[in-house]
Length: 95
Length: 179
Image 1 (tube, each protein chain N blue to C red):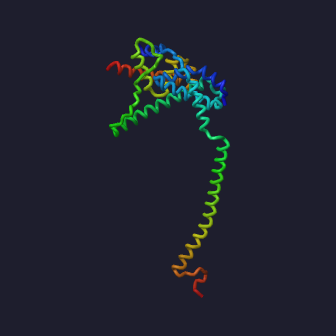
Image 2: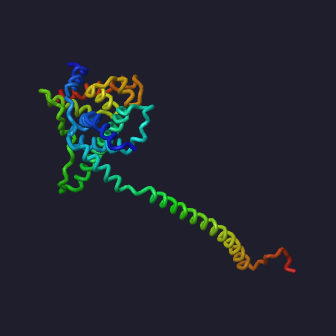
């Protein structure tokens, strides 16, 4: 028997009926999923609050970066000047 | 969203198609029933995404069913592999490892049941595309043109898949018969 003949045997498989009460089970599962899902209003409220918190964080981050960078720069220079007994003026000969 | 009456019509029209296709893939009634349930839940949830201009409802349901069955088989294979590995570490574990070679297909009513089951198990072990091409053409008896549409590939590609599948099946049959 060649392969095509063997595969043609598969056509002898009979069609069977779907089990009874399956539709009831499907409807039950659909209802359960609908109950689990959060209402759309809640989803929007959650999204809006998440965006607000993120925007707040970003703005605070940028503000604090600006102040610390400028403060940090000055503090560093002042420390170097003090530790090396340098003056911060352009008077090279200490007149 | 599809209404209840509409959904019931879709279910009644396609329930046997989905259930039988699941049976050809997973080869047991319990899993086929569970997958059929999942398929129709997905049809209900995603009905608004179906575009009749792209594919008929039947083709769309075919695709959902095939994807669910292939996902199920992949999960079962990895579960089996994981079960084997964990059994090496937990020798006292009583959890049964699922036996994929167990066939419980009510549609097989021929005299040579064992040979048919063996053939179906060989088909189950084929690569996904070859498996789908063989099931749709040889078991479901769909024309190659429709198979190409369901699989979203060309007619030539279907022919090539069938050719390769036949070669693999022939090889495996010779191996098993030679034992």
